[in-house]
Image 1 (tube, helix red, strand yellow):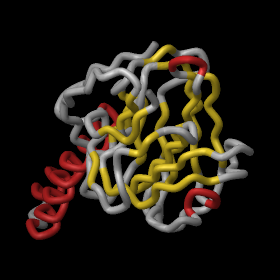
Image 2 (cartoon, rainbow, N blue to C red):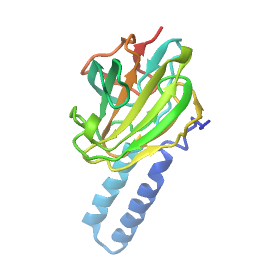
Image 3 (cartoon, rainbow, N blue to C red):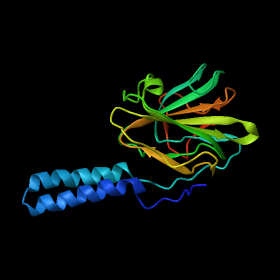
Image 4 (cartoon, one colour):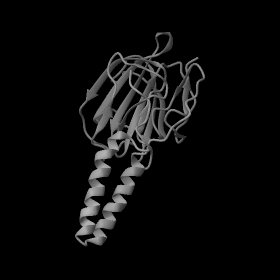
Length: 216
């Protein structure tokens, strides 16, 4: 089981970016290239903002699933013959801009039954074709009463690194941090078809806090 504790105000994955940028800022400033140093200082500040990792209050109501990501809901539909299920399944997609928190969280209590990585392209993550064509990582989770859900991390136009810290067999709790995607991306959540959606296209959601649907 992974720990849901954060490593500080920013995600651990940020440290190499922050330290590298800060070091470059100092060296450039020492060389007297102040305009360039200001640029690197602003970039360092942006990296800190991008990798922020705020604490969240996780709802404890039985039978609900929460959003795995911050962002905007771009799809709520029942699909069939997806890459992850032949039968009908409810798909909810969330687009994360570069200004959203990018730490991903588990939608509900359960056990990881599979983690599958799919290489692919890097279309803009707000496009529907990104779900099928982009590089992605699918986490399958067995939740209550033998039901299953799938969370798919989808790389975007700028995002080139998907981070997933969990493995098959891990037992997770709703709201646990499990990974992130760097610099703009998308998450697709596949739920049982009888799930009652709690969001609509255009809604803004927060990871671990916003309720996506009700399974009860």
